[in-house]
Amino acid sequence: MRKNSYAALLFLDLDNFKNVNDSLGHDKGDLLLCQVAARLIESVQHGDTVSHLGGDEFVVLIEGLSTDRNEAAAQVEAAAEKISVQLTQEFDLDGSPYNGSASIGVTTFNSNVSSFGDLLKQADMALYKAQAAGRNNVHFFDPQMQVVVSLRAAMQQDLYEALRKNQFQLYYQKQIDQHQRLTGVEALLRWAHPTKGFISPAHFIPLAEETGLIVPIGEWVLREACQTLTQWASDPAKANLTMAVNISVVQFNKKNIVRTVLNALNASGAKPHNLKLEITESLLASDVENVKIKMLELERHGVTFSIDDFGTGYSSLFYLKQLPIHQLKIDQSFVRDIINSPDDQAIAQAVITLANAMQMNVIAEGVETEAQRAMLQDLGCGAYQGYLFGKPCALQDLFIETQERRS
Image (cartoon, rainbow, N blue to C red; front, top):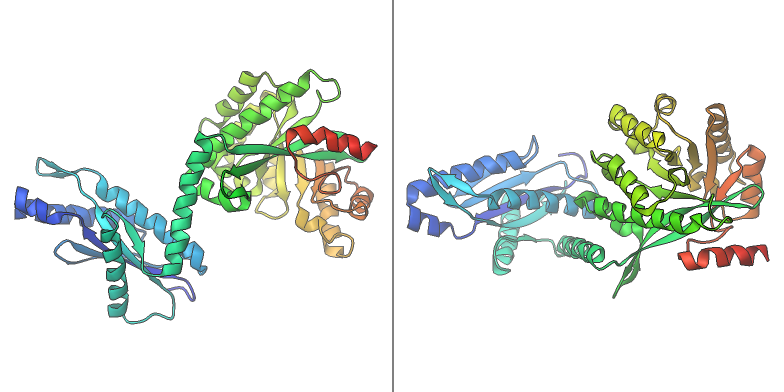
């Protein structure tokens, strides 16, 4: 086991297994156990261990989890959920269909492991709780991890509700040029929970990406952003503003992402050249050929692309050369201390020089002071975004803030 990383012991008991032996016979019960074992082996990673303890009880040992307690809990929950799904799919017992489920008790441990016997007892205690909760459940022995998993499950359910009940909102943050002119905005997702108030994207976006909910959420963001562009189109003062929309790696990797973007544009009537899709560097490290095809198709329709948080990920200059990138965004981590840090100044200068050489635009995010803006302008950066020009705000407040700043 990797030093300080967590591992997990899962204790499984087939729900109502006695009914199989009683109704179909012991030979079908034995066949079911063999098929369960096969599905368990298919569900785990290479290096994990599956054992049949006896009767209808199985043990699964999962190793190589995160060194972070909460991340390990999430990983184990995902693994247990995968097993649960596998075991609820119909079995074919020599022509006799059977639908079942399993209760799962989980205990986790790291290098400070107690004896296997103690771990088995802990997992068995957790299994008892899972069965008491109504069977076909997963329960953790560690109360703290159980809380983490329960909160995660509750938030996942809340995300479904948020989509269904239109709890999401778009906020907008201004993007300004060196002449203090508003050139566009970035659309930022906000979740207004009815009882918990506003929930930070940092808390729910990772879960949305893990569960795939980021796809329908992202589609909603695109539709709302394009509708806003259409509202602005009839106002000469707003018609040329751009709208930057973040696209997650999960969403962009979907086969229909090009159609999703074009549908949002066509349904709203928004002009494609006003839409700017912000992608992360991690996308460029995936299937670059497939990414290139999608980006070129969208560019052909007039959509532009910006690389968000440039300099913090894994991008290669080779990717920049191949792909239709129109803008690089200097990450706020390089802007925050740019006045006092020669290293941050050098990185910002390198990004600006690279963008200019490759005929790309460049924008700096996280600009909070006039000194930062002036430094960036001296380095050659002519576009900015940050609290200096206004915090993210609702659409109805966006131009009020702009007017107040001018006055």
